[in-house]
Image 1 (cartoon, rainbow, N blue to C red):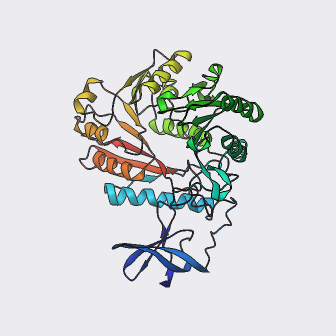
Image 2: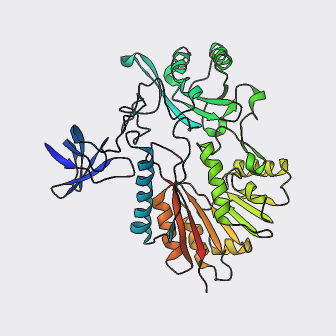
Image 3: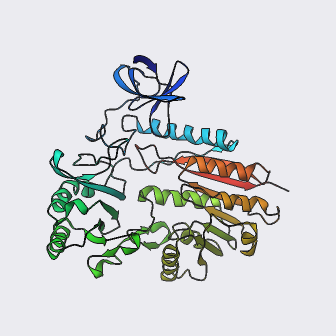
Length: 439
């Protein structure tokens, strides 16, 4: 069935949203304000999915996507929308989540954080598939709403030198002894080198190893190998084990990391985010600060330049170990300490045992920090940190946790805003500030 549909908004996945005969309709590659002739491709009880047959009216904010893989690749869903409008969509998603999920509203909306729109993605995972029907080996991201690997030769959100590897990687893997047993390649870009992690399900032969060495020399990369789980990652050349790092020049810090470690994909935005987070945290000399879900110490060590003491806590022992090593390397071992703990299972007693914190920074994964939020509001007013800065990669879990912090009158949501960490995608990164209410 075909019908005319007016597009009212975009959802978190970048799909156009309209209504037809009382049902919500989702349509790819359309924008708010446009009218399209669409055809239903999937019908559910509460919503339909449709495809565009013909665009009847066009939005003034529509752009011609510059990436040749846009129509096929599932990575970037908003390249056809002006960058400023992309951010406005993400801001609306954040505000709607806070309102509908958390029942809260920020007193102030922070200015959106912008950075490079192209060449920003310093971490990526390429799928690899041998597909004879499509001419051999494919290396790249998956097709939109599909498990198939997109037939792509460049990606504009990757640094140019990484994008240029897509085609050579096809030839390399196809020439290995068991190309059908290479499911993926991960990419991690540091300040002075690019690491490729080869996931191989079968042992590599001596000829395979020689081919990897030739590729590394020809393309100025280093190889890591992963025969099984992430814990089996190791460098092809032992001397490459410690070559990856990123710099935080504003704080005089160098942050070593391994390819499997979590680091932000967008280094420019990461530096700006640290500055904003520390500005909002407003740490005063002599204060004690907690950095929960601290990772490598991305926020902890910059905070340690100002605070009397900072305690970083993270669920991964390998990350806290590296954070401690970085603190020692920068002479911050007396101001920054790190511990390993599952923060999804903490309670108020654990929080009390840590002692009083003047301020807390929280930067959890997509699941959020529900247990931490619950523990914070169970503290007495005198025990509560005066300010919380919450960095989020999921507006839904942030909104849920905001509702926990605000509902009993423990905290107020002073401000919130979006961070365009992933331009052209539907991913919404945000930051929020909670201030303790007076007893």
